[in-house]
Length: 284
Image (cartoon, rainbow, N blue to C red; front, side, top):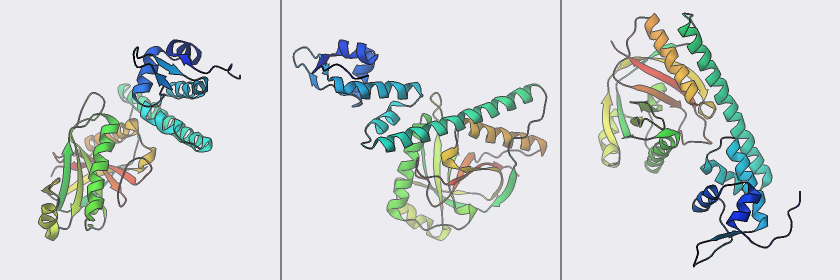
């Protein structure tokens, strides 16, 4: 439906026509998501144009899809509508994948509490030699905090072009020393194996990182595929698989920390999809 020609309307009228609350409009202004065309200097009243209603309704629709405001800002600021459509399609596909994994997790819990054995992932083991690691450790909240720390770490690696250790033992990995969610802040520790004979010299040139040695160990792991397709429910399924495997094989997890290994040159966040493995180092 074509909007009646209106040059400028106050925030109350715009709220009524956009069906967004005054609180939401003020928030979207603060975030640069939906900025009024004019703000009265003396009263602070916000004024909008009718042409902004389409953007307002798009924002409201994207919120109903469960998108975060930061994601919405990226989409609505795209100049190409086709690119925006692709972004929405990709985000919805991710949401459907996450829902499927939550359904699998719920099914596993129902089976476990009903006394049934439920198989989720195949577990394999491998031997990891002693390694020199350059690490960045911090307390973070939520998925966004995890990505931010990972981007900071990978940015440092790119800047310094570190030599690589070949094979699975040389892959970048992230240790979850505690749960990371909106309620729990880890901590997380990002680690990059480096050649032992070069470790001290490399660490001297990267004071932001900590050098430490991890002992040789055996680890149990599940292969999860491309990281871009994964979500919290799938991580939990992987952890439960490792726990069930350990009980069945009378194995005990060590104190080296549960970790995600990224089998690619560099995990850099959304848009980069290295293959992932969820691993638990074993004691003894």
